[in-house]
Image 1: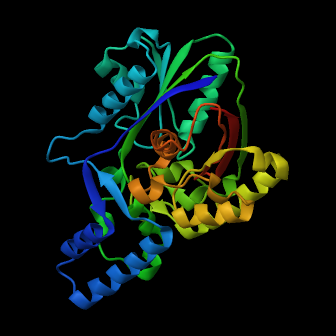
Image 2: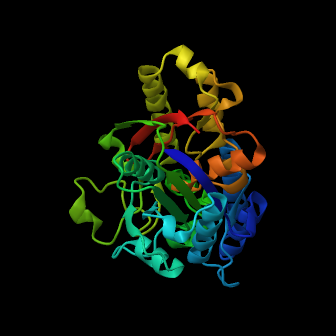
Length: 348
């Protein structure tokens, strides 16, 4: 499999940390100003600790839609890959952001693009793009398809957080609402094509941590054993115990890397691409693995937490910056809610 082309499209509205704090102040005009300022200082401290600088969100009043960005990403990726729409055998839509539970979101994207290819969805939280990539690799290697498009439209800020997340919360509640303030929005499109090159996919999961980061549907209580941490903000609202999730994921990922690669193999890779939900966490992982600047974490400070789009967004950005080049040996190393971890390596 060859990663033939990638495209990243983000909304034009840049929301800095200062602008976000201004939104919090505006949303809490009914509270004593001192209480709101204390809360804003706490949020500002957490944003600084995470390494968040800004995020990009849709201008919905101005007519920006998730679909428009996905269409633009697909068309640009096809152009970069020198392919026609008719060359695609399959389109996989993946990720958390979605407009439909039924049918597939891929169906509406293909309808909008007038594509005649096969299509379906894949959903596994922030791991969705990597799961879709593994499926695509299998289908390409067995000759089912020649070219596959993987698309995600991570547009969730208004659907799963805003404006409710702007309301002042207690210190305890901020423990599981703060991560929603780091979410950014983006669409990515990735073209993968059949080739002799082989990619290695490895996964490690821990279901006991499944309740650390959730977006529950109405009726979720019928589908889980212990809803204690789930639904604290109500259905369709993000609840993420970010500190517990990231610390657990870091230790699990470091152990996974140590069990999978030798020190020489770790040193031989040119670039590592994590799911960047915290720049400071990426820095810690890079130091403990001795990667130096090889762990690419530039997406989070610039765009926020892009959920399953963070890895393909990083690939696209690294290409544009000249950091990633053809022939580079790379590793995708995301950690995701679930808890699920992946180590995927190959030659770009």
